[in-house]
Length: 248
Image (cartoon, rainbow, N blue to C red; front, side, top):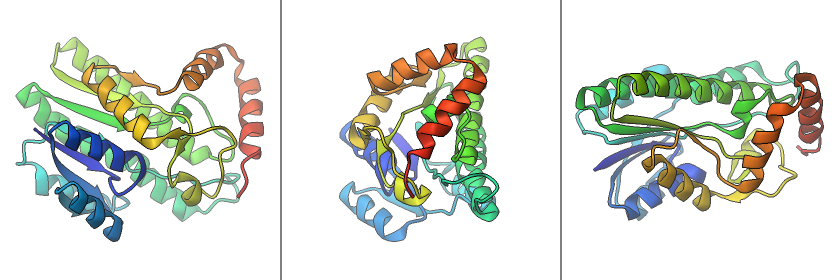
């Protein structure tokens, strides 16, 4: 049994890799952060591949390197955010975010899904976010990319269901998690964050139970339920106020 995890050098990706190792999986760990990737690969006695997911040619190259490895699980975890009002944020950085958060997982999901469907087995876990359910003033591009991943995952799920496929796809949609996200995005969550090891274990356990949308934590489950009943413009105002409390 073999799993490929992107963004495996820290946070949720690292802890997913640790948990899958505990469950007996052989790992291929992917990141562009050389020092951290080498450290976690040594800890888990795992193969690693450096890949800059901002570059789609490197994403295709990654697939070519592992396509004959008989991967059983693909975890598209790599991603980052950028805090600030849209007219002020750096365009180049946002386009990099679109590539890492949306384009790279799109490519890998499609390529591995073709292989999984030929074998009629396999799991794909796309790490989205609670942000995937709404628009996010001051984190607009990040929220948009997570909407993309969530909706793409749901569409693929329905296609697989209608074919009675034994390939399963899930979207992990956590709220705030205690990772390096804040430092990269330039903000600080003003609500309590879940521990990344808890989120990782919860996600993998639910994935194996074929759960399509995975939301860790009771608070976030309740929040996602009630936001369905809030008018769009009011929800935008509330979201802006929440974001505005984050400090850079």
